[in-house]
Image (cartoon, rainbow, N blue to C red; front, side, top):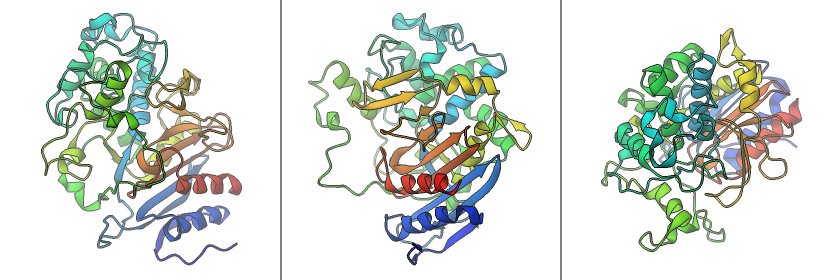
Length: 398
């Protein structure tokens, strides 16, 4: 069946073998509510799909350009993991040694023996900070966040279970990288990974890139859908234990004052907030994940060693997620495929990371393929029909 006529002009390149991907990308605009978006695919490290279209803004005055960027949310967790694993390959970190060997202050509150690999698999029990933090501390003060996390007692015994560290993951792993390299975390990423690959991936950027940055639109509420985070309706003054942790994971620190807060604010775009505020595009994510799908190398640039990728793509945490209350599966820094629940395509070794509102990056070493989809109209973070259609089209084309 031919794709319906799209009201959006699609730009870029698409190998004829992957015409189904282009068709579904057009359908995302015509039928599935996309405003602005991009999709990219690599096979054997070569770009075969690089498409973009739509608008950077809801007023539809700024067309999405070739170099457009958008918040890619938790894909930043995967890149934080890649940075940590690169430091492992450089002999700077041993995943099995205690975090406190590299970050002595972390030994507080009974954490002296917690190994580094717990940080990368959401098993350390630090998804939230109990003590009140200054407004916007996660955007403006790396030191405030890492000091508070070092002081924090785990919400569960480290290693006894896993729970998604939505907003602390990047500070935890990133601080270890900072300690062992002596470099600001985002500088290490730029100098060791994104710079050599020639890709746009920012853990904070200045106003010089605002003109090509998409405005993020929250998901349109579905009145029939159950609340995604029902615990946020609880009163923090009466909540205890894990209920309190679930609230504080999203409410502490509180936001900056009105006018400075929000995903499209300059403070958010400038923030070194690795788990949450990263900005990039599909081309960049597909290129990075394309290296991982091909043994860690692309165009002669080595990102990680094959053995490190293999360990990162081995199950470390699996089952009911303490924070989310649904099944999740993690390796080291990556979400792993869960067949029938939340797959990364049909192949058993595919891995990657979803982000808020439908963005995704996947590496598939069996197919030697990668795919990334980014957008500025949020949808379903769990399984969105836009990325499902594109992933299915990729595998139907192979």
